[in-house]
Length: 375
Image (tube, rainbow, N blue to C red; front, side):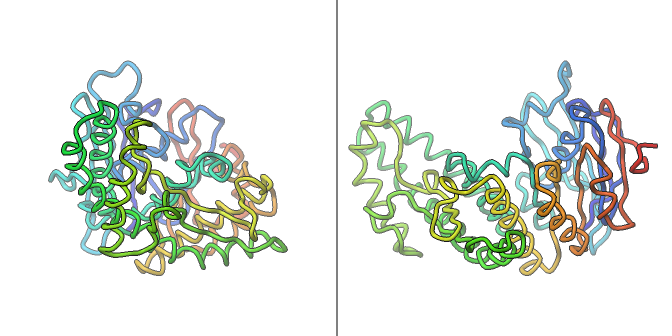
């Protein structure tokens, strides 16, 4: 799969335009606030039907625009060139492939595996569990696109159960949501642990290369309630255990007004040696951990799907120290996949990028070809 070009209309601060994308490396350079990240948002939306950094889809619509926004992209596939269009308006999101409506990413001719790496990702080690869950979930969704549908249905049931808990509703009403939560929760957790098992050795290898001399990286799945509810079993038994835990914890959940057990409350354990990175890792170690995890995700997709995913990097080079940046650039040069990256300093990339790299200057929402010197 290759992304050939991207066309935007009323998308954030971007001008209405069509931008060519290189089959190897595309470099978007310019000062902050000019639209570089917005272009990555447009690509990510095309491939996943979800925003990259925006909290809501409506945030992608250009301010002052009432008609909504549209992004279109052409993809080269073994069967020919196909066009994906995504529109966001007052009625929500609508997506089409060659003019035919689709609802979920797995309908986009099998899912478009896309790995994004942003400065937000570099902060997840020290932050709360939500960011680490999202880090893992993106890896799972690339590997198993159906995870997105199950996650959406799980969240819908979770919100309903939490509302009933706050209303002190009858046990019968709560029980109506316990079954779906246990069934969907078991699926979500099993896929997470499966993909983490695939990524783990690849990430550990990458960490050993990028953080030479450091203690080894450990990645563990931390299931909420596992110690007290024996939630370590897989398969149908896990669904039964989750159901039992929901019922056992119901009085406590009613007091607190939320559901305390399930994949929404789980965490990804990141350790350097035997010390939790969240508490003890330096800034450099934290960034090496995330870099290694992302490389593990990419290598896992390349191993299981036979090709590298589309890789989006948002000004990551400026966030890494020289040693780790050199490692990343060397890795990208050898990846032989399609990469779109942003930077404020194109010289950081020009020295390492392959000669096939296509450079675009971004200024006030306009994206135009230019050499690394800005001409």
